[in-house]
Each structure stands twice: as C-alpha cells, then as structure tokens.
Length: 107
Image (cartoon, rainbow, N blue to C red):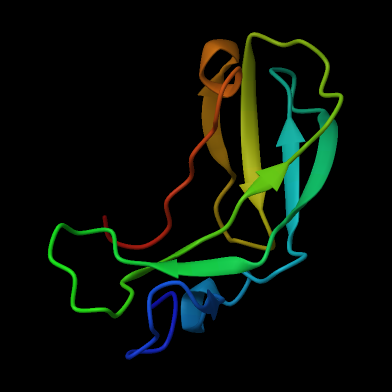
C-alpha cells in the first residue's frame, strides 16, 4: 500500500507499511557497473495520482521525482531507493539518459 485508501488525487502522499521508506527526502543511491556508489539524491514530496483510465477522484499510486546530479559515465547503473530490502533497480546508460522510472508494489 503506497498511500491510505481514500487519498484524493493531486494531494501529498507517502509510502505506508512495506513501502514506508518512500517519504519526502528519502535517499536515492546510484551505483555503477562495479558496484561503487557514484551518486546520491533524495525523493521529492509524493503526489497522489490515479494510474488507471478509470478515475474515481481517488489515487491508487504515489509518485515521487528524484535527481542525482554529476553521476560519472558507466555502461550500467543500479538505483536503490531508501532502505528498501532489494538491491536496487538495474538501468543501462541509455535508460538513465532521460528518466529512470522505478515502480514499487503492483502495477
């Protein structure tokens, strides 16, 4: 569960339960192909959104943005958010050249 049931779309939100590491200011770490930490950033404030075509006015997702400046070139990266138990999400250099999207929970 990302946000509490009944959260209106467009309002602020944060992770709950298993996703409680998704909070404004939460850490974002970027690792290169060798596993070395090459950059850090933080999550913005979360915004509740409806990710389906059906809109009840209530959100089913919480969207955060992040920026990690001055990351050195690498063929491959791993991005880890907060203290999540996973090892991070892999991205190629081409994928992170624009936006690197990460989804937690069910699609």
